Amino acid sequence: MSGTRRAASAHGGGALTGDVRVPGDKSISHRALMMATLAVGRSRIDGLLTAEDVMATAAAMRAMGATIAMDGEQVVVDGVGLGALAEPETVIDFGNAGTGTRLTMGIVAGHPIAATFVGDASLSRRPMGRVANPLREMGALVVARSGDRLPLSIRGPQTPAPIEYRLPVASAQVKSAILFAGLNAPGETTVIEPVPTRDHTERMLAAFGAKVTRTPSPDGLRITVTGRQPMTPCDVTVPADPSSAAFPIVAGLIVPGSELLVRDVMLNPSRTGLITTLIEMGGELTVENERDAGGETIADIRVVASRLKGVTVPADRAPSMIDEYPVLAVAAAFAEGTTRMEGLEELRVKESDRLAAVAAGLAANGVPHATGEDWLEVTGRAARIGGGTVVTHLDHRIAMSFLVMGLAADTPVTVDDASVMETSFPGFVELMRRIGGTIEVEA
Image 1 (cartoon, helix red, strand yellow):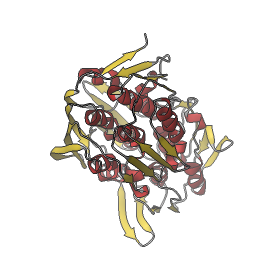
Image 2 (image 1 turned 120 degrees about the vertical axis):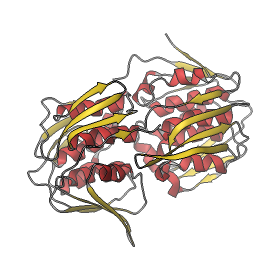
Image 3 (image 1 turned 135 degrees about the vertical axis):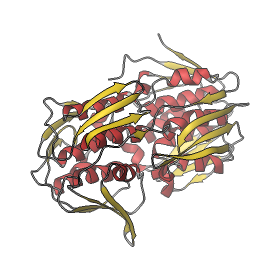
């Protein structure tokens, strides 16, 4: 999927200034394509992220019968409807897309079809058992390599069994896969969340006409979908991705003299942990022009360079910022004192062992830190930051985070592979250059 490996280096220069919009939200983009496929009729999607991960999902939906085409700036999806999916003729290659893989597993498990999933070296190391096990309870046959890793094949049952499933670990992907499978099961399928996670799936299911409820209970939040209800087409506007916005936001805070306006950022409460944390650290972030767009809150964020201080980030905040810890560690490297992040066990099973990759990147660039199985401490304002080469392990967020570090470091920071950034943020280098960042990519 990603192109030829190319190293990239970032180094400090002048202040970052300007007005930018990062690409569309990856989570919303995946789900919009999937739900439009499960609806009968035509849906239009504005602002769809066209990165490799989302294009892999588009290819998977086409393989199951959807017609997906561009109409000017919009993506038009003619869906086939619940219960009418075609069986893919060949394997589905998801590249690096963990979200696309896990959610599509749920869709296939709810239909009497079979599909085989493959991915790149990074995705093939990631565990799929947390999704596969509840889908097996619903009657799906799942066969995979040891540890439930890709390549993986699923055959859905003729009639999926509705289940009640308590999440052992907070995971919006596991929740979403079960709800997707439950859409074609008779009766009610319920997921119990002890800790709330991203609710994009529930919000969008309701927009597409599914019957879905969220009910607080003593054992957690109960999310229930009623199966075998027709889904109706819906037009979706994809807001800017807060996980992608995190990179210019942190860069604007740590590069002296900077001031940026980052536009149209989604501020779903389940995604704002980083903003909350950066404000606690003393970051001058102002939310402007807050408004509603298709059931999601969006706003512009004004960023002014700030003198940050270390804080403790509680474990219960992890679900709302799980993808942002690498760039938070970069912010912490420039903060006064020590920042402690807890509840990070999920980082061990991302595109890379993200916790280990972040620690190695900090070490390579002279940043004092300590780490355990599920925590990281970063002590900021070392005598000299930078000068190292970071191994990305095919992880786009590691690459972008440490390029942001380089923009404020004393000496340049190099990442071994810039091509991986295309999986979620096409145009990252160009956007950062446009606001004044100096990033050089190997020819």
